Length: 157
Image 1 (cartoon, rainbow, N blue to C red):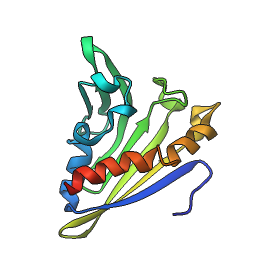
Image 2: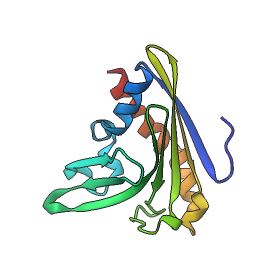
Image 3: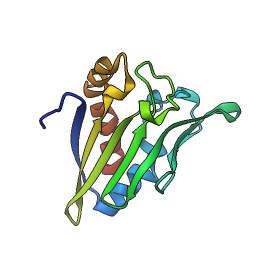
Image 4: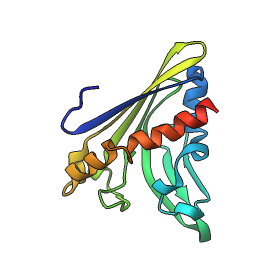
């Protein structure tokens, strides 16, 4: 997939029908999202995406720790999900949505048993200093490819 300077794109296929693929990605987010990509890490209690436009993307840890790491911009099951990515280049929470990047996920049903997921993470420039390094890190093997491999693993289990 060709990459634009301010975005990265990744594509994976899963053996789930489109509605189930969308449901796993959203409602089942906590079942596959790597705890290594959370602030709570090994003590993560839950991570979720609220199923509506304006919904919070939230992590919860011990002692009532809560961190909103994004917002739902578009909720269009089972085809499309768009989120703000309110995590800065140094893994710090970014409460200002104007300084957040955007993650768009498209679910394309290929047949009754499979779905192709296309993820595009764009607007890295909004993260300011360190945005280029951040984009490179999330494009690398330990970024979105590794995260999406966890999703594929859960979907194909």
